[in-house]
Length: 522
Image 1 (cartoon, helix red, strand yellow):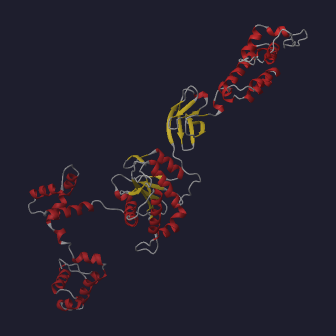
Image 2 (tube, rainbow, N blue to C red):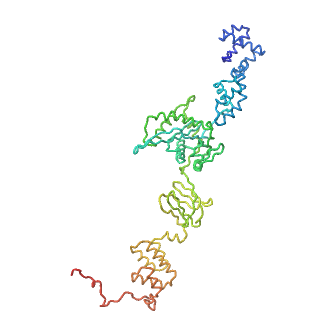
Image 3 (cartoon, helix red, strand yellow):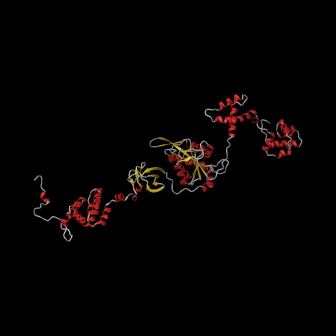
């Protein structure tokens, strides 16, 4: 009996037959037990004065306790002694360089009749495991998504260069249905991690309430048992898709057992099946991954009459949070100072972006994405630009002061319109200026000078000087200025205020250009 566990139903048969008055020998023959075993059961009933009718009403485990005092190994006085030493042994195992063999040798020195090394380790492990009970986790549909990178990489090569590259494999699973997603990315960087996670959410067709990463550097900056500090990009991503992030506790593999198991399955059902195939791009690799993961999700699970995909579609997909219409763009944060020309310089783009001139010299917060550059001062948005690549200036006219806005708006039409509001003669002069083929900057400066002269000069004198400039073809600011300063315009005025004919009279002593033409070889 001591070495064999007898079925409790058989013990009840022994009790039933004993109650009828049959001998132990006949009972042993009928139930197929050793006579001595039957004798032991009967002696136990008599020694403890058990009521057979009450014993027959007991459930198997309770009845077993009446007839079995426990396994011999656990009634050994050596086991009781080892239990008493357990707190000390547990504490010693946490210390550096301490091994089980060393603890066993010290144990034998105190207790020479104690367990041999194999039994010592076995019972020590059993006792330590008993002190760490594992709770069964009940998962809620659509509540959590566990994500991790597989430890093993996969390879693909570039056809043009022949270079073999290793890709990281991102794995995610919903623990309620075990519905799994996997794809290859080039690295475990934050950008690649968030890209893979976005593809995963698109694959699921919605967001769970909580995403649990495995303390990835890409997702968690500082691993903490209770409150890990989230990477800012990961936090932005989570806010965009409407889920919370709860990183797995460091050193607690059971927290993420679902994804750990999913990684093992991916090794068996994806890696192994693709081991003899060669891929020329990461896109081709991911196409193959998608096929194998789909097959895995559609395979009926053991001890269940449905697949992971069927359970996901039936119970999890309806409760996922709908995805936002706009895709997520990675946000980058930087602090910059507004320069004297009221621009900030984004070094990454080698480009300048305008800011309202009132903030010159101030330190501003800049958030930029793939498409936008947003500037904030004391938590208030003060500028938004479309992001552009390459050297140059992105300017919003309203950000500039009036003089700078004037500089930005310069054009022939701009100057002609301004001249029209000042003087008819000035408008004619500007139109003649812009009919020339000089550099625009030269003509703009000439117009600025004439406008400045207009503001400081008597209108009648200024218009007369402009007419003289037009008549003589001297379309410069300096000519008009000299005419005004020398009061030359008065020589051409009539008493009624009309100007006289300024062209020179014809005279027989004046030589024409034909006079100076001659043949060098005449």
